[in-house]
Image 1 (tube, rainbow, N blue to C red):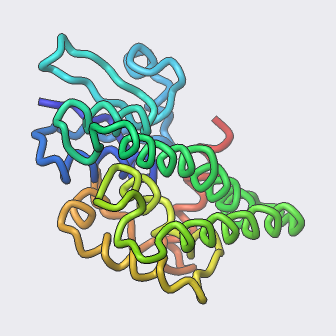
Image 2: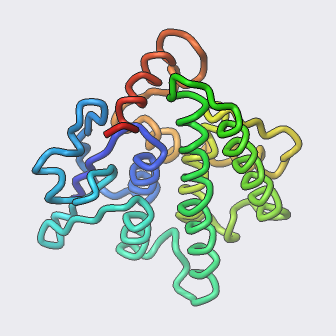
Length: 228
């Protein structure tokens, strides 16, 4: 059994979608980011960085794993799925996983901060991060040429990138003119594991689809998080 400490964010979804895809039994422990649960003494004992997600593997002496990418690699290697065992295949998956962790995630995160969360609209910063997100999406477009998935077969690399790119509208970045990327987004969206995993620990999709009160409340809570 895996204990999953998480919240409804792209990094959180990376862990929950992976657990769902691997059909591993897990228990969800919601972390209230806007309330500072991630800074509690008990949470910091599992992850001194104070960020979600974290898993605890009860089968391995309550072994804790933090950092979403590290969690995905751990679960893939634990089960022997979603990660090739040959050197070349594993490297391809790791390249695209690192691409998300070093590029897509940080850039979309900054786009969210400046486009959605900061009360002051600093247009040069908004433009900088949105343009970089679009550039990274174009890299994914090329990487998906003549392929259904980034490394050939479905892998943790697809899950990691999809969990972020799916929220491109929240970052204010459009994907027109990127047919490979759009087809891949749709393909991933149809997977039952993706549908279930992105509703863990709760479904927050509606607030992120518009500009109404739900979206405003979500942005206000996020503003608290980025200052913690």
